[in-house]
Length: 350
Image 1 (cartoon, helix red, strand yellow):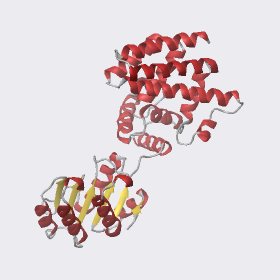
Image 2 (spheres, one colour; image 1 turned 180 degrees about the horizontal axis):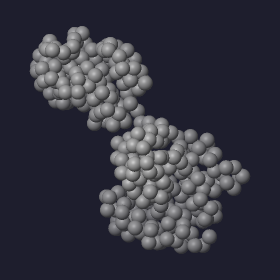
Image 3 (cartoon, rainbow, N blue to C red; image 1 turned 90 degrees about the vertical axis):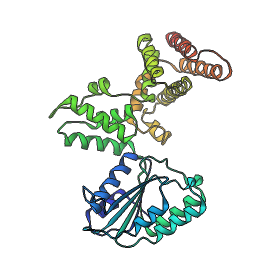
Image 4 (cartoon, rainbow, N blue to C red; image 1 turned 45 degrees about the horizontal axis):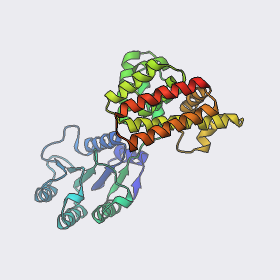
């Protein structure tokens, strides 16, 4: 069977007709774990019996695996075998072929679940011949669920739904702000929402101010605050952001790269506004780069403080610092802090 959607997999879970081989993988690891557990619960029960439930982690003994596949279910409909994070690159060709042969001959009362809760997702071009052979088998004989990263719009709806289940009000605008601050990692978003719901309380509302106060910002959001502070000549906030990022062991070159992107964002917004177009056109003009209306409106507010010439001069200063960091020795943090002071002086010129 070819790949199925999340909705189609939910239908399988709601029924009683199961296949013998499943593959659950993808970039969204929280959902990989969630649907693996849901499938196990459906076919083996909430408390699986040790007679009918067997788990193997990458590097397992193939002889033991072969014998487990032959076990007949005891007081249960299925003998369930779970393999976590199988990495064929660590196996010889003969062992790989044996595993594939075993998986291809699984009987009707045995269900094998290949799940990848932590393994990195391999692009098609990076797959070895072994990987491709296993993929062909699972798509031909099994049921394949690949859970890619969710879009910001879907994540926002999930946050609103989770908050509603806790009887907490969360508006679309504030949910967008949470995604913008945190990023698209579902596990981290859920953790942040739990914190926000606890603070808001039963029947309360998560406001923008609460999000500003409690949410741990990702690198992009933190550096956006840094650029805002620089333009506003708020040295205290600017250096506090740098202190926090350095404490989090973020590389100076990574901070500089994101700071450069923040100034490019402002420059693009400035040019669009200068040509009489709404700043939200950035989403259309740069598809995939700008996905959040909340973010582009924040960029607009930022860029209104400076003119085009100042932005060009600032971007040039950032480029010079980037060259200095990559070509000369010296304390990287000092170079970054010197740049921040220079950018503040440039901003004051405008």
